[in-house]
Length: 361
View 1 (cartoon, one colour):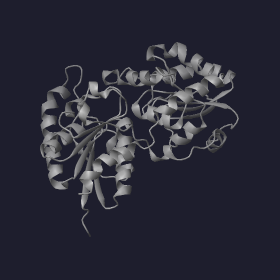
View 2 (spheres, rainbow, N blue to C red):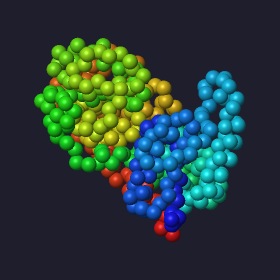
View 3 (spheres, rainbow, N blue to C red):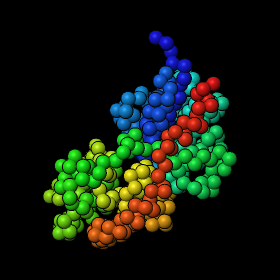
View 4 (cartoon, rainbow, N blue to C red):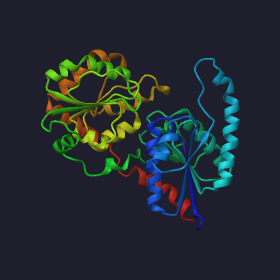
């Protein structure tokens, strides 16, 4: 068998917001270069160790995790984990001999991109958020290219390395959308009813879920149906006008079916909302590093593209605001008009363009 003459390593993960853009980059590389050898590097025990193989890519795990905010045994092991991960990353680089290394954020991308830069291997990092994670901030001085999704990122990164590419989204989001009626019929919903899609991510968002559960009677009275992704940790099973599921597989159709989306403010979610052109209420998670979801949401809310509700205010405001937007089609239309300029449909292609000189030697 002929050995592939191109190899690329893609590293990072921890959350879907890191993993799905990484997979989109991997698939685009595979399509453009059929002979390419792509291998992912993640953190043992994290979501990428399951999601990446499901997408058809091999992955190797590093023994790495972040520092805890309190004194724990995990913190005492942190220096050992760093050393172990650097040695493992070095072995992977020596074995795979990649033409380029790509980091998408998350702790696993740190050791691999650091060692790749030390070896003179071309490196690129992709920062999804309006406020970068610590790993990408630490790598910024060492890598060759920094791909970002928001303007003004020179306040964090060297200006000469920044490329405004946008965030890659999953392929199905770029296909022609279904009509609302067709999407609702596909999901088994009433095609004529106003529909809200609620998602707090694969793990769920407790504040959003509790606000929705407490407002179910008002939602039914307003003749609104739901597509409600609760996440795997939400075990209550109230009667719902519409669909209630721990995990929605066909996310693209769920977006197409909706008049309004209620969501957290992860960077990937915002990219999907913009590509779909959806009116939305954003409830940023308060439990993320540097409160980057609030900064993401503010970038949209400041232009009228989204309504931002603080997590602490969701129990009082969320359902009232959602019903209000649903009963004012002109307001929804304005929000849809304002969010569409944030869409970048060719983000993956822009990133590949930066990698081409290294892969086409």
